[in-house]
Length: 245
Length: 283
Image (cartoon, rainbow over all chains, first blue to last red; front, side):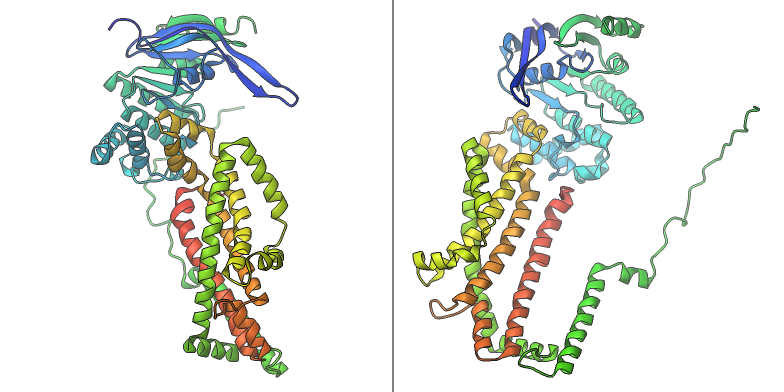
């Protein structure tokens, strides 16, 4: 395939926060560039306040850059769409009024990808992949946090997006569950080799999940380094992230 | 300090220790319906005893006399006819109120000026008891269904619109982003995310609006009941009091209570159990 799947070129992002007296304009990232290749597990790593989540939202199409551009397969991203599916950190990303299976069917029908029996079958297929068959008819509020995130991942994978966008999906889980979920994500990746853009502030998670890691510096986020996740890199990352701290 | 010895157990599957059937008494006393029914029986007995001791059926008829009056009025078709008239009027007013509340909510969620308008109007009109508008309504719409429906709309509209609007605002931004992510259109987002997401609040609004409407309607009928040849429950109560048929008055009041209980505990409870409770969205 010619060229990268996702190209982020000199992207500066700003957002407004409502202050008590005046609105403030915050620069989240400053001239960030990187590219993601097909089937890469690309991790954006940085301390809180480095604009990594904002960057992911821009790739999702929720925020437009004030400078630079974001290209998916050479086409400019300017709105959210089902070719880039988000997995959020929040557990309430599942529709509470729909069962596990209905949640996935909803995704498929809302995006007009599939309908009727085909959608139900595809949903069951991916529920099986994340080992939740017994819970296909359960409502989200009866599931544990880890199970909810597995449903969200199954829903995202069922959409077969060009790129999966994961915004600290395991940050709200306990350490044991988080470890299991990371393993499961890698297992799913071995099967399907999807492309994923993964945001985290945890260095061990970045090393475990990612094949390539982008290090952002804080306030505003700028690219400090882009490295391959191979060998003993934890200390080098520590040094680069906290050199000014 | 020496090391303390470590302990290792092999875990045997725990059989029949954990679950134990409740005794019959525990089952009965744990059931709220049983406890409340018992309470009702006790209250009825106190009523009966006090009325017998008082011995003045004109002021306070016995429970048995009230029941007898209720059954004879039901058998003669008077109470069913009055109740039917009341319910029909209620449904008209309730439906009109809901329709307007829907429009207000849509306007308020879509635009900022709509939100301002709804908040201002609600804070103005919510403290105003609907029945206070009845004299004005009679002047504007005359002695007919129109004025009662006007008052009912006022009773329903603000409670429902305010709750629905608050519910829509409380739908989480994550869900909104999920909706956009899967490419939902504006209408699709409203129908498939916003309304179900706001449903717990909408249901609260429906319940409050219903309670307001029911009380308002009975009061309005007490003030003026006869229109187009028949009267509702409020008029039935008023008329029987004029004829000094006090057991019938009590029977009318009992009907008002029973119908109120029926709607709140059966209709709304069922909706609640099938939706917000099942979804774990109860507020």
